Image 1 (tube, rainbow, N blue to C red):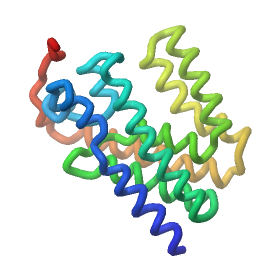
Image 2: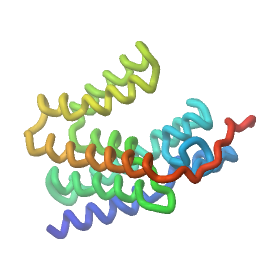
Image 3: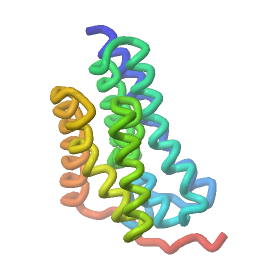
Image 4: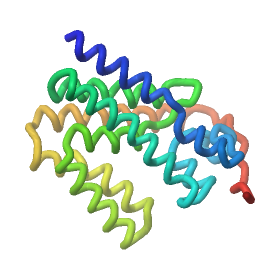
Length: 188
């Protein structure tokens, strides 16, 4: 039991690193004051463009991947799950409060590499076919379905809990009054 708590605490600390906000700030953009105010990788992409936002995607995913791998080193799959859940919670916590989607993606590679690789391929195919927004959503939403083929049902249920957490964040954050003032893409 102690390893679950340790993995979750380490994951929370990693998740709380505001990678996307730091990447955007490097380019003179405060993500909390742009678009929907979400300081996550997707908002960084919208504000910075793909060339400058890719470190935000990689960094937000790496936080949960690292937490999951530390969890594996400390114990079993559920310990890794606790690390990923902790990273997602840390990423979603104030003052930055992202929606944890890229943390989920990174965590997926730690929890189920085969399913995550298949969904990565689906994301690439969807991106080539209809654009990144379609590809990314297809890859994330297909993950538990692909995982049904590759993993025990209990692991799929664990993934469902993580996805429900993301859904709850979207629901809560969309119903909250907007505080961010829209701003345009930086010129530099």
